[in-house]
Length: 113
Image: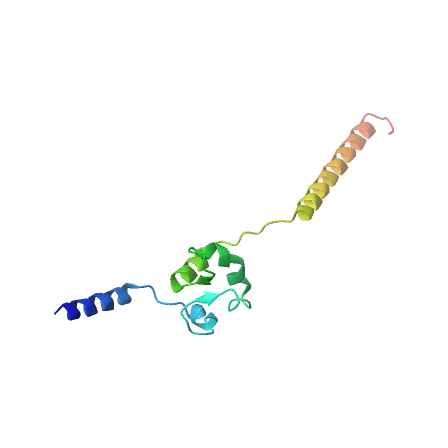
């Protein structure tokens, strides 16, 4: 009787578990039930989110962690060089607008610059 109860319990818990995504099965090349960073190397979305999804930091994603991975947003961090270029371009556009405004004001006043 105890064995029957255990079997029913495990069957019910397995049925309640989330289904394994097809993509997870495709990435799990060795069939061990986990996806490593090496197995995910061809999928940029998985690679960029891998560390954030690996909750237990064991270097592999379980099916549960993989489902969580699909819900994570990708963080796009700009490099320092990109931030500097953006700031310089914005400042240059502002300076051009200021110069055009001053030139227009001077011309309206009848003066020359």
